[in-house]
Image 1 (cartoon, rainbow, N blue to C red):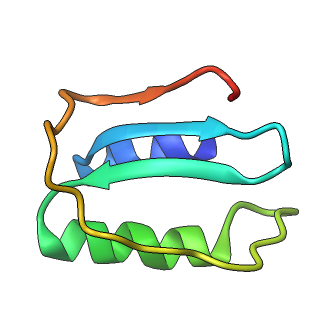
Image 2 (tube, rainbow, N blue to C red):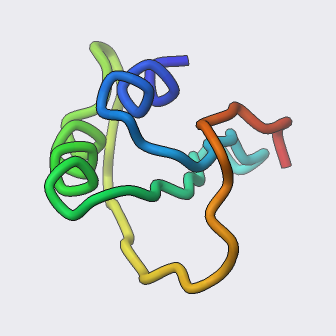
Image 3 (cartoon, rainbow, N blue to C red):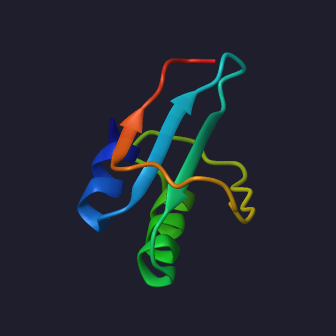
Length: 73
């Protein structure tokens, strides 16, 4: 929920999901400044989270409307 709340506050679209290996995967779409802000927030994570790495790649597919939490994969 933390990632969803942060993305919603920044007006971003995309999705987030937990993975069975304990990692989190997300698609974050929006303007350069809000995406960079979100990446900074994700690198710090919510209270109690341990963030080891954040990997970033470009997305050139359909951008979803809104931001949603997907089922664990």
